Image (cartoon, rainbow, N blue to C red; front, side):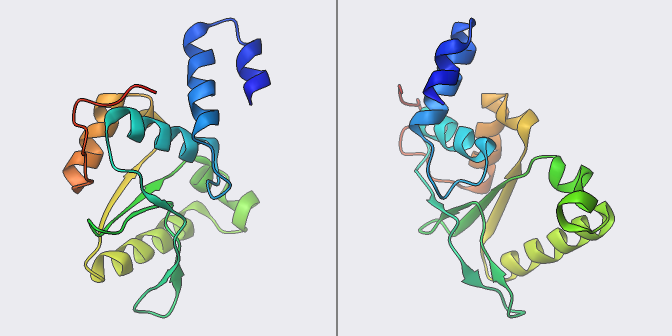
Amino acid sequence: MEELALSLPDNRRRSRIQITAKFSRTESESVGESMSRALMYRLGFEEPELQQSFQLPNGRIARPDYLWRNAQIVGEFDGAQKYTRSKTISGKDAGQVVYEEKQREDSIRSMGLGMCRWGWNELMNPSTFASILVAAGVPRPFPRGRNV
């Protein structure tokens, strides 16, 4: 990723890739998840646990992208492909994927956990992204943010 960053002519893009690389973890399942964590850090939010599994009331296993255990909040980064390419990815039509995701979210909320979601549009607008996390109650020990 560092090699990619150095090849970019635009300093702003180069910086974003370098920050993303710094926050990449094997538990992150996409670039969007890593970029989300980098922005969480920069905006002063508590670092979440990644991909933590737990059993839902219906017996299924949930493994949200982010868990703020002490605040009892889970977070999900959703790229559009999960829905727009659902037939290719899972063999299910988009409506079925949306319905199953809604059931999963309802089960998570029934356990007393808060939940927040965002996608690329929200992630590309730091104030919008921060508003989503604040509204969900994600701890923010450094409200003025941090330098990376």
